[in-house]
Image (cartoon, rainbow, N blue to C red; front, side):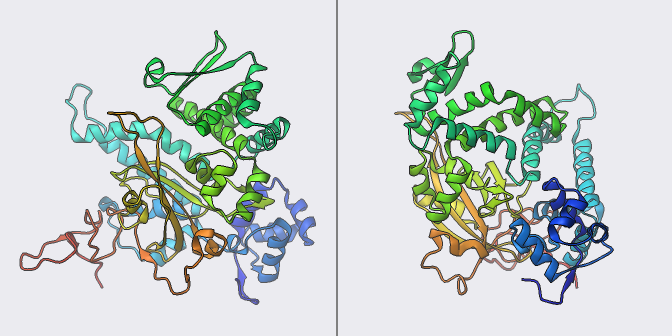
Length: 480
């Protein structure tokens, strides 16, 4: 909470808030009972915001007051810090206060620097000539090329705070029209498809092969593999309904995104159709109300809405409608090797753009107790603490000789929200000591970590031939 007489410069955040609400300066001024010139001066950082003004903003627009304080974008801070650790820049040991000052004063310049560094890294990894054999650098460049569409789409969703209002409202309207909360959902959805002249067929796995869903436009058939569970079958029907009924809406959003890469454009279309389907299965208002009443019990909510654990957990990260917000969760999905295949954040949790996740995070130990929820309080290097739950899920498929893949789902939020979660019952959050984790070993500079797999990229390795400690890798710490 801001002190009563403290005054803050919030120009950038105030402008972003106003624009996200679709208001002019004059309209916002009227709603807040101040002059338009006052809003203009604050947005230009020529007038500080008092605690009274912050409270008024929070009251009128139903915001958490902490969102109005001049805090840095955690993902941008992580990306900016990572870029500055590149040895070629020679500024790897900048004090955190200096980094924060840059991010507070010029976030757009910091973001531009991150993009420039990405372009620089890709340029030096490109092969010198097309006829050269594939070197390690070529392989890294090929990886960068293949992963770029995923990063582009992830960044787009991050910029939306993982909430896409027009798609969400369209799905909610269809759910209400179909009365999915009263009718049998699968029957209602298949009947809707029948109205388009399309019928659903559940086919044996040997017929579908390695495909889980296939749509034959000319025959008017949606073919779904028997390997998919009921929740996944409903989800796939919802995806097709998005393509059939929301094509214009999705096309407009993709056009507004201004993506130049064809693969990224296609991936964004797929992602928006998936978003629609999840919002159709779990309509916003009903799902948010259920989350609050069930205290975000993911397992209970998955049963209530006929969804899987992963679908319900992922949907929780999208509850960021301006006038009806849920808890700002982050979500991550990893395999047993630590590879991240899905990540989203409605809050400020930073994810690394490469290198996996910290082995001390309980998302990895979840594999030791399959299908059981684990809890943990974690603390990032900058001092922010989060409450995290983790549980394994099993992907579609699975038969004798070909077991289904097991993945781990991590879901978390700022520790201040933890009392609202059923998973925090019985935990003394004031006395619980957080587990200190980092983004990953390449970027973490915590010394004496027994779980470390690599020395930080901006530190020289230190080898002591006479001693052996729990930490496999030792490194030179920052001087003085």
